[in-house]
Length: 507
Image 1: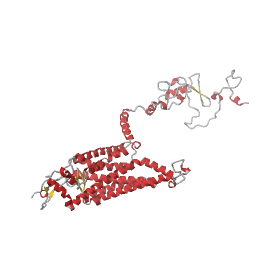
Image 2: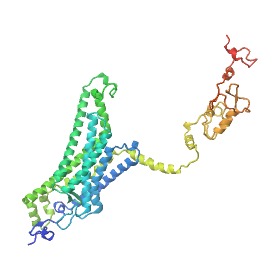
Image 3: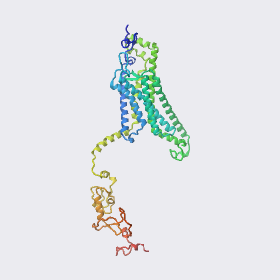
Image 4: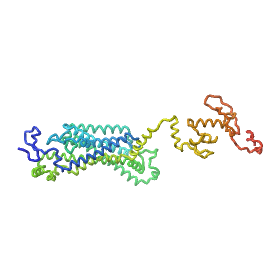
C-alpha cells in the first residue's frame, strides 16, 4: 500500500516497520504560496544591507577620533549583537544550503554545518541584542531616577552580563533543543524544550527592559508635572543645582532641567531600545505561536484533517488548499514582517547612532593622507616655516615702507626701532641679519645699557655688562637722563644741547 499524492511513505527513508505518510520536505513549500521563497530571499538581502551598516559603524568607532563618532561601549556592543543576528540570515544567503536531508527530513545542526552556523549567530545575536538594550535602559534609569554616575564598575558588570548570558544561552539552547531548517533557509531552534531554554528567559529580560524604560518615563513625567507647579524664585536663575546643596535637594525645576538635558542626549538610545525590544518580542511571540500550533497538530491530528483532505482531493495542488493551510501556520504577511524587521535593526542603528561627522571624518582622513605623504623634512625650523604661511601669526607693518614684513622685505628696510625687528625670533631665517643690524645700529653707555646710534653704523656689538648668563658681582649703576630722550625745558636749550642730569630735579 502506497501513500496518496503528495504524501511520501517514510519506510523508504527510515527503519520504521509501519506505514506513515509524510509531506515532502520542506514543509513551508506546502503551507505558503510560491513567492514565499522570494520574500525570504528579499528579507535576507535586507539583512545584508543591515550588516554593512553595522560594519560601517564599528569601523568608524575603531578608526575615527571620538570627537567625530561619540562612541560608547553600550553602543558598540549593541551594534555587535545586531550584526551577529544579521549574520544568521546572511550566511544561508551566501552558501545557499540544502534545507532537506532527504525527501521528508530537514537538515539539522548535526547534518549541515551551515545550519549550525546560522542558528548559532541568530540565537547569539538575539540574546546579545536583548541584553545590551536591557543594560542601556538600566544605565539611563540609574542616571535619571537615582542620580547615579555609571562608571568603570558598571562597564565591567555590563561586559560580564552582556556577553556571558548570551554565550550561556546559546550553549543551553544547542544542548537541550538544537536547531534545524524549519522556516526558510535560516535554522531556528527546535520546539523541544525551547520555551524553557530560550523563549521564556528572552521574554523575561525583554519584559524587565520595558518595565525599567517605562519607569524612567514615569519619573520624567512626574518631574515635569512638579516643575509646572514650582513657582520658587530661586530656581529661575540657573538650571544647575548649587554646589552648596546636595543634588538630591534640587528644586522641581532644577530636576526637570537636568532630566531634560539627559533625555536630549540619550533620545537615540531610548529609540533603539524600544525598536529592538519590539522586534524581539514580536519575533518570540510569532515563533512560539507557530511551535504551539505544530505541537497541537501532533497531539490531535484531526486539526489538520481539512487541509489533508483538500490536498488529496486536489491531487497535491497546494494553491487550491492555501486557505485550509492558513489555519495551521502563521500568515505570510506576519512572517514577512518579522523577517524584515529583524533584518532592519542595523539600518536603524546607523540612522540613530550614526552621525554626519563620521562622513566628514572619513573624508578628512582620506584627504589628509595624500597631503601628509607630500610633506618632506626641510629643516629644524619646518614648524616656523608652516606658521609663516599664516599671515596673522607674524605679519606687522613697517613704519617706513607700510608694507607687510615677509620674505620679500629685507631686514635693512626696517627702521632701527621697528617693533618687527625687535620681535625677530631666535632660530628664524632672519635672525643673523637681525643680530648684525642690531649691533651696527646700537651703542653702549658706560653703565652697560644700549642706546641707538642714528648717525653711524660703526658701533660694535658688546655683551651687556648686566648679563647674568654667568656669575658676576653686582655693579654700580648710574642713571643718565639722556637715555630718556626727553625734551629739555631749559631756556638755554637752543644754545646748549647738553642737559645736566642733576639739574632736572632742581626747583
